[in-house]
Length: 242
Image (tube, rainbow, N blue to C red):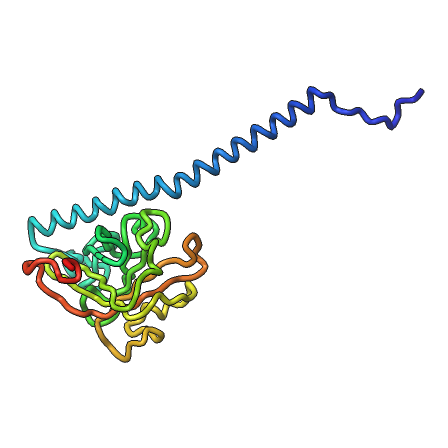
């Protein structure tokens, strides 16, 4: 009898090897996914918290040992940017938001580059300096890298956002519930944002973060106005002492 055209079925041993190999691949893939999730949820947070604590520690040490320098002191002929700008990637202030926790305190650094936002909040470099007329705009991660703005949706009108540059306390007050927009809506950090409700020039603050919580298809925005200032020498402002 001819064997032409007859199919040869794999042996039971071959089937077992294939099944075992696929199972091992699935287990390995599952393990890698779990490790990645642990890295994203835990390890990046540990590293970011340590980095932020380090930035605050450096600021406090600088403020306690000498004059505060919040901008680039490079001589004018060698300076590659307009005078009065903060130093890119360097911390210059600490932000407190009581609504987000009694111990919530984050350093503010110049710029919004990826590496900068892994060490704290980032100041949009084209916006006003802290406390000056204009819009002092700040970005922060919603999730990962310490989750600084995880509870951003909890912000309410009247909430205090307090910052210090080592010489002065600046207390801003939130004016609106968080507003949702698209990433391309750069007008939210204009000197007078069109949709903020502000009627003219003033001393404003804009906070931005990602939306949804684990995505980045949209942005959450909160606007605030400067409510009061006081010298650091007079102690902490009432917004922080309760």
